[in-house]
Length: 97
Image 1 (cartoon, one colour):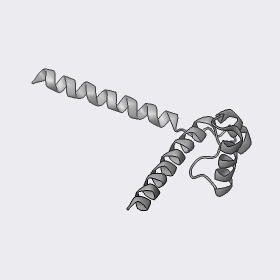
Image 2 (cartoon, helix red, strand yellow; image 1 turned 45 degrees about the vertical axis):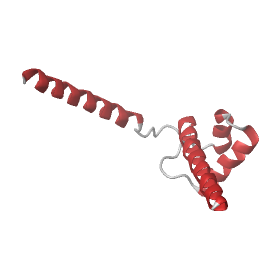
Image 3 (cartoon, one colour; image 1 turned 90 degrees about the vertical axis):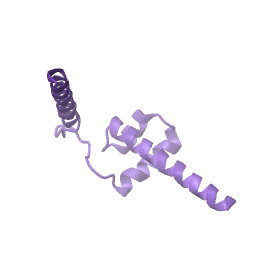
């Protein structure tokens, strides 16, 4: 019983450390010129333009957008590609029905 309680406690400590580490990652750096939160329509248009011009060269897309960091752009790309892929699947299914 004691071993199980110690295991549960140490697991809880690890969870808290991970949670704390995550909050540090998302801490806003006010010294940068990077926006936080939702992407504006203009930022998204520049993102699409950058994809068309530079492919997946995130540094060049970051320079083009100007207001988003590399990790923010990669995260946005991941969500964008996921949504476009899902839409393609839905469109394909509706055509074959």
